[in-house]
Length: 404
Image (tube, rainbow, N blue to C red; front, top):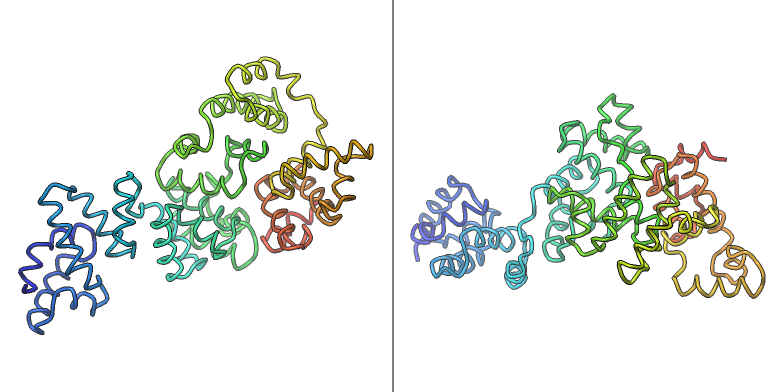
């Protein structure tokens, strides 16, 4: 089939999916006819689509459209996924049948572009990350974190910066410049914005459901980052994303919202609200939950300091629930404190316990946010280093120096 004949059949599909412009399509047809090459080979030789995508995939999708097996919009999504992002057709079709998000959403593209513009990732990492995101359904940022291309703290800065761009507080160039300065100088995003005299509107997040769930040991800081990225890329509220992904029961979300309001009004502390949420998450039915909520004073009765340290240990997954139960039993036998017992039976090293106490001190003093402290403590534990060295690794050593 001549290039012009094939282009007439599938040209609309190629243009609609953004694979080529109408001008490029016309040029490719002219070159293919002049050189007696196929349209697909011409595209591939010029660095656009693969020959297989043009010669096999596009006509197949065209037939499916004509047979009303798929819509033009679905075909565009499939062509985008297979022809441009490298997702295999079987995976793309499966995602389409399951109602999954096949196209790389604009915000994910924006986030990746911002990270590339700031020099945080290379264009190759960006392209490979998009490919892996499509095939795993993980958001782009989390793919980069799992591949250890980007640190969780850096992803947090990028998500915050992108949200500020979306809100109009920063331009993309300003956000990229601030991220670049933060990366090169080893400071956090706030310091970078202040140094550059840029807007900090929208920089500080309000203590919300995700933060409360982290304190309740129900969620990890990394999981919250994923939820925040889904929220940003799909333009949804964080609470709705929790429900959509099936991560939290609706009754837990509703109860947590009430507890967060009580925290805001000063009726409860964050730690007390987290204790209540932890108890609620263990309930097997609504009646048990209502009993806890009807007697909040009893629900928050606990040793404040021990809960905070144990919460940090749980958030960083330094011990498993089974190990914690073992340590509790051992501490009762030895008539010793739980933390001392954990060290005595070598469940925790003395260095990790020191790091945990330092982490608690930085959070209590307001020097670090909870998420930052958890990230640094987790890094210290995983890499067998000190908490202070972890702060240096994340670029937070200047804040940590304020805590003796």
